[in-house]
Length: 142
Image: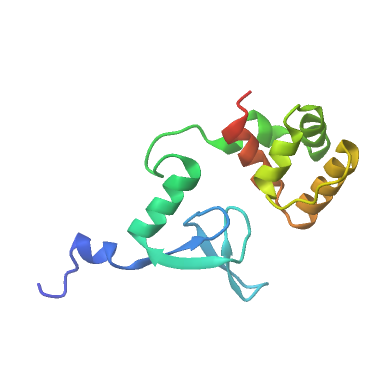
């Protein structure tokens, strides 16, 4: 009976999570010969006590993982093509706020068209379109 672990023992074990989206869905990818996130594909995997991870998750998403919420991936923004997404950002009066929300140190001095093109080029190269969609979902409900 001494070998049986109690629930509080499980809570003391650190969890692996994605540093980009905070998902706990971590898998080993043979092609990469490393672990990656099954949700967003990031290879930036970190470990932390479950309580620390829960706090980070709640700060980012505004709710606990166990709370029932609308799945952002089934919403309007996640159904847009890259072109449609670019048109939405370009057509928004808050386009600078959107860009700064993703890249706080985005270079200034460009006009709107050049800024949008540079923004989407950077997003695409860094595989962050999902991050933009999530930002829009959280800040601009349609």
